[in-house]
Length: 135
Image (tube, rainbow, N blue to C red; front, side):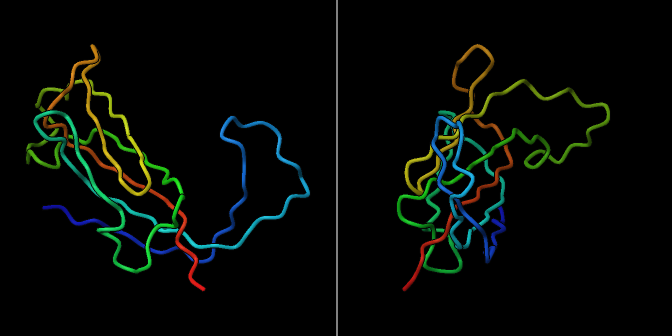
């Protein structure tokens, strides 16, 4: 088990920008909103995948805004499962983590440098997503 830390950040300011980047008109106004922030740990399964649905773990309803895309970062973090001291131990293997975000469904996929699925990879993750506006 791992404890998922989360909080609601209110207020936040949001602005629409193109996914491709580029210039944004300077006079365009920002909107007021709030955001959910999640932080925790996980371990990919035997096929190198870990999944979570933000709506299922949100403590303060209503949850992530419909059609809002969470920003997710995951980093391999060895030592959270094995209780071994860093000194004198072997360095952890190189690992790539990729986040797949479909609505509020998030999956983390782990790969070796050669591109093969890498099972049982412990990692830390955090996520920020705009909250649902309630009227």
